[in-house]
Image 1 (cartoon, helix red, strand yellow):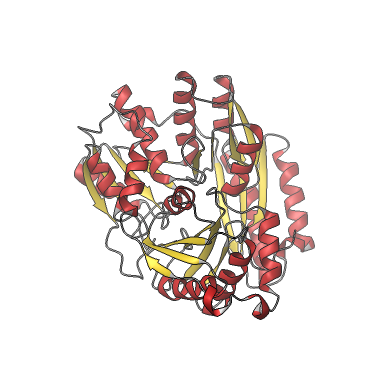
Image 2 (tube, helix red, strand yellow):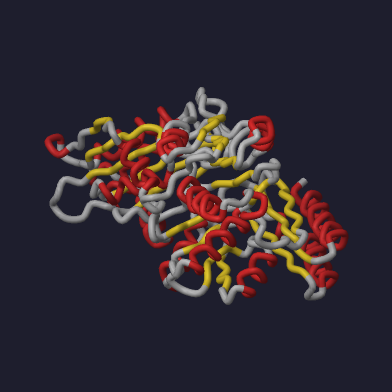
Length: 447
């Protein structure tokens, strides 16, 4: 399905470029109309991260929703999974998260959740897109039926208690020194407080948002600052969230990174031993390392692969009856607890294993040796570089050179004008050469 506004994770782009007050207002109206069912008073929960443009988009969406008769509950900066949870627990008809996730402050986005806290299906997004291109003047609410908007307090405490309840009641993080990097984003208040309440010795960084510094040299996409702090503080573990806290990367006591594939391996093995896996397997994307697949197979577990995007992982989990899935990038979905990726809750599951085994994180979180995997991005301004004949030829030649001893994955990003080239195999030199050849062809086509 060709989509004009929605990418793989909502609507995202440059603030005041693609994401203007006009489009935010129209999304509020279109989504509000799409989710009005029955005669009850409809309402929507709106959360955001800490970007400067969040104010502009938030108030434009309030105008859109109230103009079609929906009441609005504003919760301020909150993690994306918290907004999804609140949408369901507060019996809202719709949830909105204003965030561009791991992008820098110049971008922003709009993520929508249905009444059960799940991201919208392609069909519902298509319905909203159709409304976005129509004149909605005749469908606006009458004067007496306009919506109201109000800010609500206490929602931070709700999310903290929800996250704490995902752990066994008798489990304490006492004795663990944890450095947590909140990326100057949506989790800057709730996550350090929750860790402290669970008994950890907490060293928070990335908790001074100013509207401009979200994800800037911090968070899960830039974990170097976290690694340095872990070594400096001689901490047991480091936790790096992204700007909206739906993904997580860990750092062990030596300052080495632990990616989403290793986290999935830790949780999968732990849950299998505890009899908590709903099916003998997990769901991950085509990006997950072949090493993870081999590790799971050695423990009698399947790896079901999906296209990139946590919504596709979740769809496969729901249709196949799996309760654990995620992405190498750190989106981990634990469907027993959450309806979307939750970086903090995933980190807590790993902390529980660390506390139970009483072993260093470097041992607990190294379950397999990943195969060499090279990922490079090629940015382009316009056109379709993947349709270029030289690019197609380079991809074909690369697949022949790997000859079944590795794999290639070339795809366009669903959130930005970037083509991602991933190669994987046992011979790192060969894989790197294949990827570089394709990247070079793409670069010439993009120019």
